Structures are given as structure tokens and as C-alpha cells.
Image (cartoon, rainbow, N blue to C red; front, top):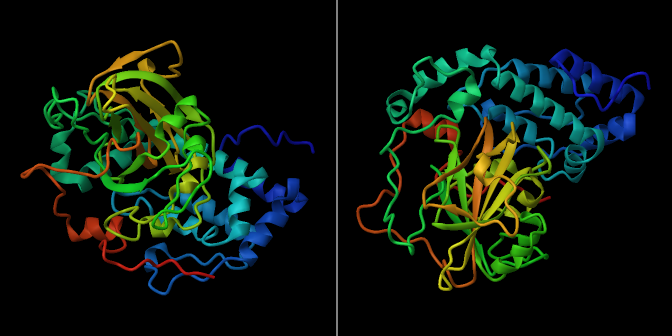
Length: 395
């Protein structure tokens, strides 16, 4: 080969030329894997909305190139920011060949390079028109956020914007038994009776703690415990905070993994109760970080927090204080203290609790349980209410 295939593409034109060349030369099986993926694409569910419909069956390399160019040139809005991600995900929907294509070899490198190109754009001043568009769509909710006097420098700075003091008060700051939400999010109990290495189904959901925590020695603390899913939607505040007070005893801010390759991404979004009943085992393989907090109380034990970058920019950013903590370090953290933030893209936090420490979600009367959405927001972010039957097909 006369080209350096491992050198990242500098522009979208370079990227498209590269994957076209890979296909022509079947570089490391790229053509073989792509052709197998499109030949085994499953039909879209009958109720798939038009705006996220994309039939990959028997598509050519030129179709793939055109899709990437269109995606790169597209300007995502608050209410349609997931559309291209969902269209792309149909290539791996219940498709083993699509999963292999996205998660290994040059197909994985393809998604990594495209993600990097999107990130460079979101970090550049060229993305500023997106900021104005999102501010207009978010409307009154922008009153919650700090706007720099000189304005935002780029879209990612806007996306990771800070809230004004007092807009996210920490509940019961002096009561160490109270766990608070780490972010603005949709919350679900994932699973209890967590296992160390074997994903065992519990109510259709699985979790592999040892993989999720990157083989951390603290994984054993959560065996038999509980996991809670905290999914951030595009219109939400995208910083994440400590759910409890204590000492951070271990952290990693970049556990390498895949960028795309969810077997059923649309089902994650299928209900207003996002992520309910979903198989979380795949998040063991996505790019993520993790942090373990010792509450310094035998009755509360340790609490794990795993920020996961899902699709698109896949960016997990820890504040310097919390990067790469290891023994014998013990970094103090207050409940509600900012840990880090996500840049543009899909994201969630998974909280881990020791066995018997956190058996259920509990609220006091009068506390917030949600808010009314506009019809436009609901249609843009959710495929249906939590009562909507899953669109997932079994083949």
C-alpha cells in the first residue's frame, strides 16, 4: 500500500477516499465484511418513523460514502439529533455481520475516524451556527445555564455548558444516606444480583461488572449488588456529578472501546422510559470511564460510577482532579461535586452499589419525578411512551 492506512483522515474527502480505497482493495477484509453486513440486514420494523428509516439491504460502497458525507454535512437539532445515529444503527440491527463490521478491523477504524472528524467540527468555530439554533430550540430552559460574556467558542463548549448556581440544588447535603442523581437524566433500575464475569440475564437485562470496570480490583465489591441506569438525552445538562460523599479510591477516564455497534439501538429509545428492560451488557465494550467512591461507612460501602460515551463523539471527560486515581490515593469528593462532562453524542451514567445497599429508587413527597414535554420534544426524543411494546423483532 502506498498510503498510511493508520494515519487519521484530515478531512471528510480524505475519509471517503480512504474507505472507497479500502473497499476496492478489500483492505484487511473491509469489502468482505461490509458486503456481508449489507447482505444480512434485517427489515425495519413496520412502525419505523420516516425520518429515521434507512434500508441498508444490498447497499454499495458508494451508498456508504454518500451516507457519511450527508451525515457530516448535516446540522443536528435538539429534536432530531439522534436521527442519523438511528439510521446508521439499522446496519447492525439484529445483524451479527453488521456487529462484526462495526466492532473490528477497518470497520472499527472507520467509525473511529468519522467520530474524530465530527468531534473536530464540534470543537471548531465553524460549529457556532449550531449554538444559536440549539439556543432557540431550547428556549426558556436556557435560563438555567451560564452563558459566557464573550459567548461560546464552539458547539462542544455550549453542549457541556454549566448551570447557574442554585439551579441544581443538592438534596440533603448533610445526610450521607441520601444518594442524588449524577446528572439530568432518565433513570432506571437495571439489575440486581450483579455477577463478576458472566452476564446472567435478570428480567431480560444483563451486566458484566468486571468488564464494565476494566478489570478493576474493586469489581468484587459490587458482586450481588445493584446497577442504576442514568441516560442523558440531547436536550439535557451534560455534566456529571458525584452521587455520594466519600473518597475516590480508583478512576480511569478513558477505557478504550467501540464507537458504534449496538444490536438494537432503536429499542433503547423505544419508550419514554428510555432504557427500561434493555440489555446493558453491550456497554461493557463501549468507550467509557469509571470512578469508585468509598463512602467510608460499612453500612453504605462503595459506589461505582461509569460514564459511557454512546455513539457519535463518544467523549468522556474527567476533571483533572479525578483522572487516573489509584492506590494509595484517596481523593475527597463531596456529594454533587462535578466529576466531568460529555461532549456531543450519546451518553449515560451507570451507578453501581454493593449488595443490599440500594434496593430501590425512593422519593419524598413533593420531589420532582419528571416534567411535561412539548409534543415536538417527545416526538424527537422518544418513540413512544413507556407502555409502548418493543419494536424489536426476533429472527
